[in-house]
Each structure stands twice: as C-alpha cells, then as structure tokens.
Length: 115
Image 1 (cartoon, rainbow, N blue to C red):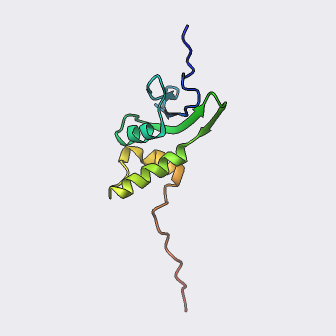
Image 2 (tube, rainbow, N blue to C red):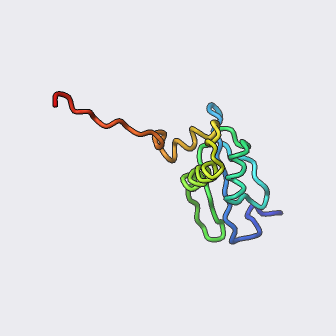
C-alpha cells in the first residue's frame, strides 16, 4: 500500500485552497510530489485556480503547517510590479484579503473650514 506522505520528507508542500461558494472549499490539483512556492505563484498568475481562498504550506516530516497567503500575495504584487502590469482581475479578491483593498488608495486630507 502506498503512502500519501511525500517520499522527500524535508520538502515543503504548498497548496491553494479554492472556494466554489455553495460547495465546500477544495484544494487545487497538485502533482503527487507536491507543489512548491514557485509553482503556486505561477499557477495563480496563469489562472489555474478560480476562487482562491488561501495558500497553506506544510512539511509532514517536521510536523508543521502554516498559512502562506500573505507571502504569496506579496510575491504576486512584486512580480506584477516588475513587469509593469496590474495584478490579474481574477486575483483581486484574494490579494485584497491579504494586503487590504485600499492599499493603493490615498485618503484625502481634511481641509479646515473657516480659516
């Protein structure tokens, strides 16, 4: 019987959780040997997951798991900035959740009345 635990025990595995609304959230398809940070970023930029909810990274050999969504969003923003392009519209809800939907907006300063 084969194990679901990757054979490369020290490998970190990144997975994207997709939310399809009425149905329960699912993990996007990933290779048997797992998916790394670079693959997740490229999959998101290429639109392979439709309703991104979060990115989890885990290492079974070391016994830990953590939310890496903010790191992924930071990298998406960095790459799009380097390419002088906007983050794809399909990623806006995901990026807004982790970097704030008003991150690029300058709020007006109050103007004193009756000076």
